[in-house]
Image (cartoon, rainbow, N blue to C red):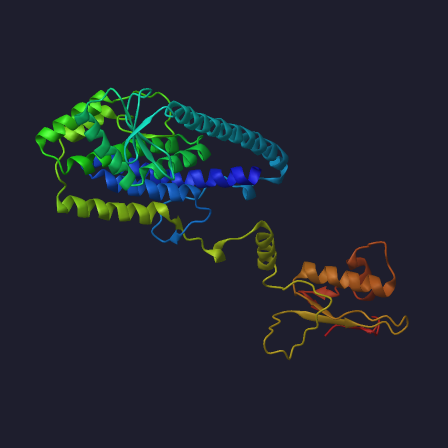
Length: 402
């Protein structure tokens, strides 16, 4: 459950930027045809549920600042418990909204059962106040019985435009996405604006084929069927459900968009999709895991001396290997019959002193950890001079320092 919540959290964070871009575009270009906004909301919905993302060098979406891999080990247990608590809260919110959606659907189903079919898939009902579409696979249009024939005709044009645009499918899908991301206020605002843009897009499609008198009848029908809702609507796609005031202004001031405006809006939509629908490219070579970083740091610190490897033989005749100021130690104890592996060590005084001490301890059987200088002084004071070894006759014959 924690993994699912973290994935939803990551998707919600990265998708918030395309939602904000659509909101800004919607605020500045108020004369833009609303069907363009509906397409953009569709892109935002895909971004909110897509488990992977397309990469682009033009992407402006930042990476998520907090991830599960960047948690320090000291607070890992506390972070896991916190994530688990938030996962339970998120799941509870999803369950509440899902129950609300199911109960709303069942309530409408019971409400429209005593309806009468007047033509095709149009039903008249006494228990409703506004026309709406109900159903997903086989949508039906329900109209209240107190409307006149002129108002019913206007409402039917609007609802048929909804069916032709498949809004009875897109709106429930939008509610499902909203349910998954209910904790994100940007997504909540985006869903509310989606519902308004769906209605405005249908209004534009209907009034684009009307004269002035027909527009007035349409306005009158809209105001008469307006319904004020305080909660988020799941279904249906209703005639006067949301944004009636802004829709009235749109109908009164509607003008066909010019070709220049259409081209500009489409170009801006493509820019938004390119910059916010995609994710920035990740350079795999520049990424270092904690283990890789430790290995790289270790290799960098030993780049000049390559470290001590007792299982590797080195030769001065190897053309691919250079040994600047490096010495080679090879020893064999003929008395005990034990063979010591070949190795090499750098010419730095500290490392040379350490390696010589370990070799001398092996030959002399000295396990007390006495200083190497005391051992070396026994054979020759000033044995090590400027990082260069000098072999004395009193040294063990089996120890060869080239």
